[in-house]
Amino acid sequence: MPALFAPPLLDWNPYPSRVHTMLNAKLIDDITAKISEIIAASPARDIEKNLRALMTAAFAKMDLVTREEFDVQVELLKRTREKLEDLERRAGEIEQRNQGGG
Image 1: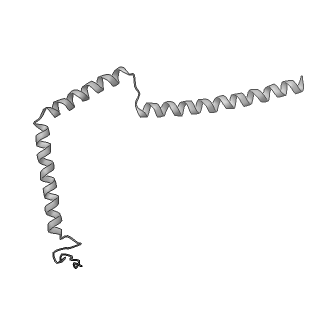
Image 2 (image 1 turned 120 degrees about the vertical axis):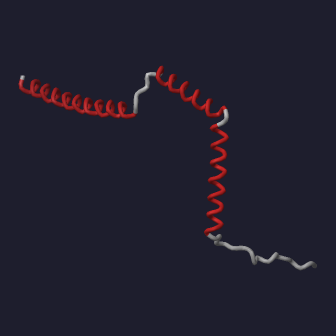
Image 3 (image 1 turned 90 degrees about the vertical axis):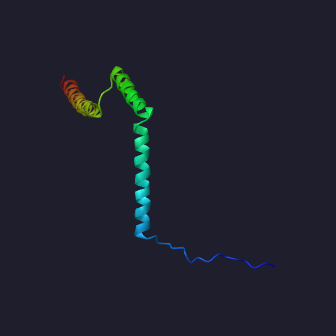
């Protein structure tokens, strides 16, 4: 029966050095910069601009409101409902008084 063999783990380091981490970060930054340069020089930039303009025009036609305007209207509706409930309660009290005293 052959013996099981495990390679030595002399070079294995569970805690990579800061230099190694810094090199990886620099490599990632370099790759990101290159990709950004390629995209900036490609038609993708024009496509993004055109798509943004198209979406802006479509949203303008939809008669949308901002979140702030929506929140203002929600608060206004809440206060209106509270006033209506108060008026209904008061009207009910007046009706009860008129029925009881009449």
